[in-house]
Image (cartoon, rainbow, N blue to C red; front, side, top):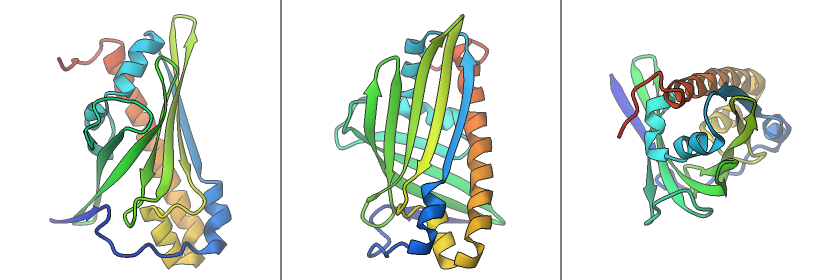
Length: 196
């Protein structure tokens, strides 16, 4: 198996996104939710423990605070590492993330920079709501209209296949988000081992 690694700011000049794909990516949003028997504060604490994301996500295998950041304050940055199998190859992409929303017990969000000059490409957000007997966790992924994610690069390279490319990525993201929330639920409800 060959490992291919793409790290931010190591991919040359940022190309201009194809404007014919702008509307498609403006509508590119995925949401998932789950209800957990825990407090909103407990859910927020776990969600913002970004070094633990690799325990839950099937795609993001690691995340670590960078630039001296130590926690989820607005403006803090972390580096996320994602991995997926493609045939006999492992595709790894490492991207910078910047916290944009941080309201304890209520919300946490961040933008992910692109591989070129770290211009924001996508955004992730968690919203928490107290419900009878627990907490409702809503997770949302939004692709920015001119964000240059990997899927945007593929769609711009083959505009005649853009709709199919986006549909495939939507399905992968939806399944991954559901799996992530299910794994978090297991920990929050004490049905999985907690790390010290």
